[in-house]
Amino acid sequence: MILETRRLILRGWRDEDAPGLFKYAKDERVGPAAGWLPHTDVRYSRAVIRTILSKEEVYCICLKGNRNEPIGSIGLTLEGSSERPLDEGTAELGYWLGVPFWGQGIASEAAGEIIRHGFDDLALKGIFCAYFMGNERSRRVMFKCGFKHHHTNLESKIPMLGETRVEYFNYLSFEEWKCNKTKFL
Image (tube, rainbow, N blue to C red):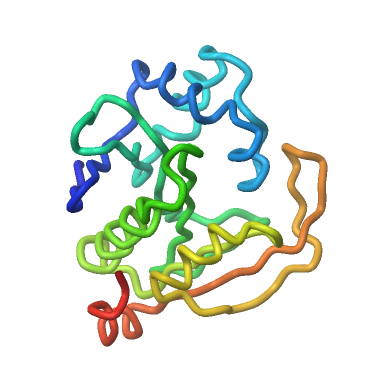
């Protein structure tokens, strides 16, 4: 499936996206803020595409002018895990964006479309989204999209980084989105 916004194409990841993924995912300002290690080479990026980013409802973010260059990733996790359980009909939104594209409203635009897709096309009843303490960019995107604080985990474990951090979970219900979607974005 391909989703579009005014400036963006959201499409599935492909093996040939590995060099573009590596270009932005190697930056130490990106991955650790989201809980993952910077990519070390194109082979590692290709493995991430095949094992993580190729999942259902995970999209490569591309600018409309260059739909072949990934500048970030966004997606909905539809199935929870023992560490992050999800009730039926809910999903968790996750995203990241390459540093050169920060501060341009791109993450909010992509998130707005994924949220619309989740509620309109997938009939979700709610979407969670979380950020780690100190990740103010992510916090702003969530609140710009209408998410409200749900709960805080003072000791979220981040196995990839071998750390424990404070994590803030936010929630947007279908009803809240439906009533206020013209206000968000």
